[in-house]
Image (cartoon, rainbow, N blue to C red; front, side):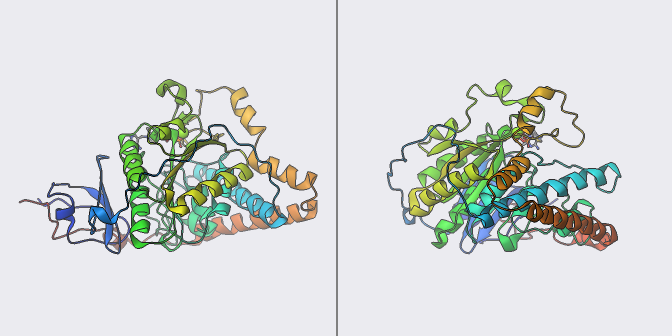
Length: 403
Ligand SMILES: Cc1ncc(C[n+]2csc(CCOP(=O)(O)OP(=O)(O)O)c2C)c(N)n1
Ligand SMILES: [Mg+2]
């Protein structure tokens, strides 16, 4: 039987065999941009390939910038517009997921569901610091990142409900949103698989000569995957425009970083590659925004990748089925006291950035929006059974298949 390859992103290049030195690779995910392409095998082995000759990639011996190794506290002040953007986005994500959990309890959402509650400042700070054209790829805890990227709460809720109006037609569910128009490359369920994918997207941007970067996010549980080390090495060698972000929420499922990593300051992983690497406080959007801006400036100057360890926390368990008994109530409370939504609201009011009425208006707007999203999801149809046979890729002339 012929093997099938699974493709994600745009389709196909013809000289894959040459670029991969004739090596037979089956079951791989490939992203193609113009003449450049990137492939990663599903086993996690990363392979970068493309229609280029090595000497077209400048391999300058740029010395990595002096590393700053301390968690940064925000000192800057921002405009009212900026604060309200952060507040509204974080509240939208929070209310969306709270409502999604209710729907899950009602068995309207099924399958996996990993919520981002507690981590919203990361999505808010990233989104405010990027420019149009930049790409994002992340792991499966992704509702918040996707909503930040412009996936509507209607399309997101409908996706969770498995409806045809969902962002990927109800076929992806909680872990696999994808929004190519806004360069949101998912939503990836295989831990660490998106690290080489993001590296490949950055490769394509460099190859095409844009000034776009690719934010490549992963959890602390992915930080010890071999694909990360291969990707970091390639990205530094070729000075790719990639911003790696590890969202260190302290746990990989129920296993703490302390139990799996001798080095618990995960940003230090980047130092082995001479990659500028820093730790960032992830409980407020200001410090995330500032760190991303600084990293983006470095990357857009052509100096290559940057690595941020954003220290954050999830209040809920790994997924809806995890009661999170592996940590104490005091620990959870410690982070809830720094809750990004509440502290940003308090900051806005205490500093007279906006009035209580303005804040209330945002709350009312979000509440109505989320209820509309649920109604939309409820009323939308399920995909037609014939959809089982669409959006699947089968390459008939796969060059590595030997009968
Ligand atoms: C390659 C692979 N191995 C194992 C799993 C099972 N798994 C799902 S999530 C997870 C832990 C991920 O931890 P982290 O990246 O810290 O994510 P968080 O739970 O904090 O969102 C594991 C081991 C998987 N999905 N993929
Ligand atoms: Mg984690």
